[in-house]
Image (cartoon, rainbow, N blue to C red):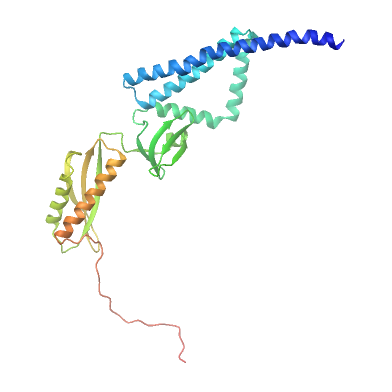
Length: 284
Protein backbone atom coordinates (compact mmCIF):
# COMPACT_ATOMS: atom_id res chain seq x y z
CA UNK A 1 0.00 0.00 0.00
CA UNK A 2 1.44 3.34 -1.03
CA UNK A 3 2.28 5.92 1.59
CA UNK A 4 -0.07 8.39 -0.01
CA UNK A 5 -2.95 5.93 0.30
CA UNK A 6 -2.17 5.29 3.98
CA UNK A 7 -2.05 9.00 4.60
CA UNK A 8 -5.33 9.48 2.77
CA UNK A 9 -7.04 6.89 4.98
CA UNK A 10 -5.51 7.92 8.32
CA UNK A 11 -5.85 11.69 8.08
CA UNK A 12 -9.68 11.69 8.09
CA UNK A 13 -9.68 9.29 11.05
CA UNK A 14 -7.32 11.47 13.08
CA UNK A 15 -9.23 14.58 12.11
CA UNK A 16 -12.46 12.93 13.22
CA UNK A 17 -10.86 11.83 16.50
CA UNK A 18 -9.49 15.30 17.17
CA UNK A 19 -12.91 16.72 16.40
CA UNK A 20 -14.47 14.36 18.96
CA UNK A 21 -11.85 15.26 21.55
CA UNK A 22 -12.43 18.96 20.93
CA UNK A 23 -16.18 18.50 21.24
CA UNK A 24 -15.68 16.53 24.45
CA UNK A 25 -13.50 19.28 25.95
CA UNK A 26 -15.90 22.05 24.94
CA UNK A 27 -18.99 20.31 26.33
CA UNK A 28 -17.22 19.19 29.51
CA UNK A 29 -15.85 22.69 30.10
CA UNK A 30 -19.26 24.24 29.39
CA UNK A 31 -20.71 22.12 32.20
CA UNK A 32 -17.82 22.07 34.66
CA UNK A 33 -16.80 25.73 34.69
CA UNK A 34 -20.26 27.15 35.51
CA UNK A 35 -20.73 24.42 38.08
CA UNK A 36 -17.34 25.18 39.64
CA UNK A 37 -17.47 28.98 39.64
CA UNK A 38 -21.21 29.72 39.74
CA UNK A 39 -23.21 26.80 41.15
CA UNK A 40 -20.81 25.90 43.98
CA UNK A 41 -20.47 29.48 45.32
CA UNK A 42 -24.26 29.89 45.03
CA UNK A 43 -24.87 26.68 46.96
CA UNK A 44 -22.31 27.78 49.55
CA UNK A 45 -24.16 31.09 49.94
CA UNK A 46 -27.43 29.20 50.46
CA UNK A 47 -25.76 26.98 53.09
CA UNK A 48 -24.46 30.05 54.92
CA UNK A 49 -27.90 31.63 54.88
CA UNK A 50 -29.42 28.50 56.37
CA UNK A 51 -26.80 28.41 59.13
CA UNK A 52 -25.45 25.00 58.16
CA UNK A 53 -22.57 23.68 60.28
CA UNK A 54 -19.19 24.38 58.63
CA UNK A 55 -18.20 20.69 58.74
CA UNK A 56 -21.29 19.51 56.88
CA UNK A 57 -21.17 22.51 54.54
CA UNK A 58 -17.61 21.76 53.39
CA UNK A 59 -18.42 18.08 52.92
CA UNK A 60 -21.46 18.83 50.77
CA UNK A 61 -19.45 21.32 48.73
CA UNK A 62 -16.77 18.68 48.10
CA UNK A 63 -19.41 16.16 47.04
CA UNK A 64 -20.93 18.79 44.75
CA UNK A 65 -17.51 19.37 43.20
CA UNK A 66 -16.99 15.66 42.56
CA UNK A 67 -20.51 15.32 41.16
CA UNK A 68 -20.00 18.31 38.83
CA UNK A 69 -16.78 16.80 37.50
CA UNK A 70 -18.36 13.38 36.87
CA UNK A 71 -21.41 14.87 35.15
CA UNK A 72 -19.20 17.01 32.90
CA UNK A 73 -17.08 13.94 32.08
CA UNK A 74 -20.02 11.67 31.21
CA UNK A 75 -22.06 14.25 29.27
CA UNK A 76 -18.96 15.41 27.38
CA UNK A 77 -18.12 11.83 26.41
CA UNK A 78 -21.70 11.19 25.31
CA UNK A 79 -21.90 14.39 23.27
CA UNK A 80 -18.58 13.61 21.56
CA UNK A 81 -19.79 10.17 20.56
CA UNK A 82 -17.53 8.13 22.82
CA UNK A 83 -20.27 5.53 23.22
CA UNK A 84 -17.74 2.75 23.60
CA UNK A 85 -16.36 4.41 26.68
CA UNK A 86 -19.82 4.84 28.18
CA UNK A 87 -20.89 1.33 27.23
CA UNK A 88 -17.87 -0.14 28.92
CA UNK A 89 -18.20 2.06 32.02
CA UNK A 90 -19.77 -0.75 34.05
CA UNK A 91 -16.84 -3.03 33.30
CA UNK A 92 -14.39 -0.23 34.09
CA UNK A 93 -16.13 0.51 37.39
CA UNK A 94 -16.09 -3.18 38.32
CA UNK A 95 -12.39 -3.46 37.55
CA UNK A 96 -11.58 -0.32 39.49
CA UNK A 97 -13.65 -1.52 42.44
CA UNK A 98 -11.74 -4.79 42.54
CA UNK A 99 -8.40 -3.01 42.31
CA UNK A 100 -9.33 -0.54 45.01
CA UNK A 101 -10.57 -3.34 47.24
CA UNK A 102 -7.14 -4.99 47.23
CA UNK A 103 -4.77 -2.07 46.88
CA UNK A 104 -6.50 0.75 48.75
CA UNK A 105 -8.04 -0.76 51.87
CA UNK A 106 -6.57 1.98 54.06
CA UNK A 107 -8.04 4.66 51.80
CA UNK A 108 -11.46 3.07 52.01
CA UNK A 109 -11.17 2.72 55.78
CA UNK A 110 -10.29 6.40 56.11
CA UNK A 111 -13.15 7.35 53.80
CA UNK A 112 -15.68 5.40 55.86
CA UNK A 113 -14.22 6.87 59.07
CA UNK A 114 -14.52 10.34 57.54
CA UNK A 115 -18.21 9.76 56.85
CA UNK A 116 -18.80 8.85 60.50
CA UNK A 117 -16.78 11.87 61.68
CA UNK A 118 -18.76 14.27 59.47
CA UNK A 119 -22.11 13.02 60.74
CA UNK A 120 -20.98 13.36 64.38
CA UNK A 121 -22.54 16.58 65.69
CA UNK A 122 -19.88 16.84 68.42
CA UNK A 123 -17.02 16.90 65.91
CA UNK A 124 -16.87 20.13 63.91
CA UNK A 125 -14.45 22.45 62.19
CA UNK A 126 -12.74 24.93 64.59
CA UNK A 127 -13.28 22.57 67.56
CA UNK A 128 -10.45 22.22 70.06
CA UNK A 129 -9.61 18.51 70.37
CA UNK A 130 -7.04 16.40 72.17
CA UNK A 131 -6.07 12.82 71.27
CA UNK A 132 -3.11 10.50 71.86
CA UNK A 133 -0.93 13.25 73.33
CA UNK A 134 -1.78 15.75 70.56
CA UNK A 135 -4.00 18.82 70.61
CA UNK A 136 -5.22 21.51 68.24
CA UNK A 137 -8.10 22.97 66.25
CA UNK A 138 -9.83 21.15 63.41
CA UNK A 139 -9.10 23.01 60.17
CA UNK A 140 -10.70 20.64 57.68
CA UNK A 141 -12.27 17.18 57.50
CA UNK A 142 -11.56 15.47 54.19
CA UNK A 143 -12.55 12.15 52.68
CA UNK A 144 -9.23 10.60 53.74
CA UNK A 145 -7.61 12.81 56.39
CA UNK A 146 -8.47 15.48 58.93
CA UNK A 147 -6.20 18.51 59.19
CA UNK A 148 -5.59 19.86 62.69
CA UNK A 149 -3.87 23.18 63.46
CA UNK A 150 -1.74 22.96 66.61
CA UNK A 151 -1.30 25.74 69.13
CA UNK A 152 2.12 26.41 67.54
CA UNK A 153 0.33 27.09 64.23
CA UNK A 154 1.55 23.83 62.71
CA UNK A 155 -0.73 21.59 60.65
CA UNK A 156 -1.06 17.89 61.47
CA UNK A 157 -2.54 15.62 58.80
CA UNK A 158 -4.34 12.88 60.72
CA UNK A 159 -5.82 9.77 59.03
CA UNK A 160 -9.54 9.66 59.74
CA UNK A 161 -9.27 6.13 61.15
CA UNK A 162 -6.96 7.41 63.90
CA UNK A 163 -9.60 9.83 65.14
CA UNK A 164 -12.43 7.35 64.66
CA UNK A 165 -10.78 4.51 66.59
CA UNK A 166 -9.08 6.42 69.44
CA UNK A 167 -10.41 8.38 72.38
CA UNK A 168 -10.76 12.06 71.41
CA UNK A 169 -11.48 14.82 73.91
CA UNK A 170 -13.48 17.72 72.48
CA UNK A 171 -12.99 20.73 74.74
CA UNK A 172 -15.66 22.74 72.94
CA UNK A 173 -18.45 20.22 72.46
CA UNK A 174 -20.43 21.71 75.37
CA UNK A 175 -21.49 25.25 76.25
CA UNK A 176 -19.25 25.43 79.34
CA UNK A 177 -15.72 24.35 80.30
CA UNK A 178 -14.29 23.98 83.79
CA UNK A 179 -11.01 25.53 84.88
CA UNK A 180 -9.37 23.60 87.71
CA UNK A 181 -6.22 24.87 89.41
CA UNK A 182 -4.45 23.50 92.47
CA UNK A 183 -2.59 25.73 94.93
CA UNK A 184 -0.39 24.44 97.75
CA UNK A 185 -0.30 26.41 101.04
CA UNK A 186 1.70 25.84 104.19
CA UNK A 187 0.19 24.02 107.16
CA UNK A 188 0.54 27.21 109.19
CA UNK A 189 -1.48 29.29 106.72
CA UNK A 190 -5.17 30.13 107.11
CA UNK A 191 -7.29 27.83 104.88
CA UNK A 192 -10.42 29.97 105.21
CA UNK A 193 -8.59 33.15 104.21
CA UNK A 194 -7.02 31.39 101.23
CA UNK A 195 -10.41 30.02 100.18
CA UNK A 196 -11.88 33.52 100.18
CA UNK A 197 -9.02 34.76 98.01
CA UNK A 198 -9.55 31.94 95.51
CA UNK A 199 -13.31 32.59 95.29
CA UNK A 200 -12.91 36.37 95.01
CA UNK A 201 -10.33 35.97 92.23
CA UNK A 202 -12.77 33.79 90.30
CA UNK A 203 -15.52 36.40 90.78
CA UNK A 204 -13.29 38.92 88.97
CA UNK A 205 -14.10 37.00 85.75
CA UNK A 206 -17.87 37.31 86.09
CA UNK A 207 -18.14 38.26 82.41
CA UNK A 208 -17.24 34.67 81.42
CA UNK A 209 -18.28 32.78 84.57
CA UNK A 210 -21.04 30.19 84.11
CA UNK A 211 -23.02 27.95 86.41
CA UNK A 212 -22.41 26.22 88.75
CA UNK A 213 -20.82 28.71 91.14
CA UNK A 214 -17.03 28.63 91.78
CA UNK A 215 -15.89 26.27 94.51
CA UNK A 216 -12.77 25.44 96.51
CA UNK A 217 -11.99 22.14 98.22
CA UNK A 218 -9.09 20.48 99.96
CA UNK A 219 -7.65 18.12 97.36
CA UNK A 220 -4.77 16.55 99.28
CA UNK A 221 -2.74 16.74 102.47
CA UNK A 222 0.80 16.49 101.14
CA UNK A 223 3.96 16.09 103.18
CA UNK A 224 4.85 19.76 102.98
CA UNK A 225 1.63 21.54 101.94
CA UNK A 226 -2.16 21.53 101.88
CA UNK A 227 -3.38 21.35 98.28
CA UNK A 228 -6.48 23.44 97.59
CA UNK A 229 -8.27 22.94 94.28
CA UNK A 230 -10.20 25.93 92.87
CA UNK A 231 -12.82 25.22 90.21
CA UNK A 232 -15.04 27.49 88.16
CA UNK A 233 -16.80 27.27 84.79
CA UNK A 234 -16.55 29.58 81.78
CA UNK A 235 -19.20 29.96 79.08
CA UNK A 236 -18.71 29.55 75.31
CA UNK A 237 -15.10 28.38 75.73
CA UNK A 238 -12.33 28.46 73.18
CA UNK A 239 -8.60 27.83 73.52
CA UNK A 240 -7.55 31.47 73.69
CA UNK A 241 -10.19 32.49 76.24
CA UNK A 242 -9.47 29.41 78.35
CA UNK A 243 -5.72 30.11 78.44
CA UNK A 244 -6.09 33.84 79.11
CA UNK A 245 -8.67 33.38 81.88
CA UNK A 246 -6.64 30.66 83.60
CA UNK A 247 -3.42 32.70 83.39
CA UNK A 248 -5.05 35.86 84.77
CA UNK A 249 -6.69 33.87 87.55
CA UNK A 250 -3.40 32.30 88.70
CA UNK A 251 -1.62 35.66 88.60
CA UNK A 252 -4.38 37.33 90.64
CA UNK A 253 -4.37 34.56 93.27
CA UNK A 254 -0.57 34.68 93.52
CA UNK A 255 -0.52 38.46 94.05
CA UNK A 256 -3.30 38.48 96.66
CA UNK A 257 -1.82 35.57 98.60
CA UNK A 258 1.55 37.31 98.65
CA UNK A 259 -0.11 40.47 100.00
CA UNK A 260 -1.88 38.41 102.68
CA UNK A 261 1.34 36.67 103.69
CA UNK A 262 0.13 33.24 102.52
CA UNK A 263 2.89 30.91 101.32
CA UNK A 264 1.98 29.19 98.04
CA UNK A 265 5.19 27.18 97.86
CA UNK A 266 4.82 23.42 98.24
CA UNK A 267 8.21 22.83 99.89
CA UNK A 268 9.63 23.66 103.30
CA UNK A 269 13.02 23.37 104.90
CA UNK A 270 13.81 20.49 107.26
CA UNK A 271 16.77 20.04 109.55
CA UNK A 272 18.90 16.96 108.91
CA UNK A 273 21.06 15.39 111.62
CA UNK A 274 23.28 12.30 111.78
CA UNK A 275 26.79 11.05 111.10
CA UNK A 276 28.46 10.96 107.70
CA UNK A 277 30.98 8.19 107.09
CA UNK A 278 32.86 6.95 104.05
CA UNK A 279 33.27 3.19 103.76
CA UNK A 280 35.83 1.22 101.81
CA UNK A 281 38.84 3.52 102.26
CA UNK A 282 42.24 2.43 103.56
CA UNK A 283 44.30 4.46 106.00
CA UNK A 284 47.49 5.80 104.55
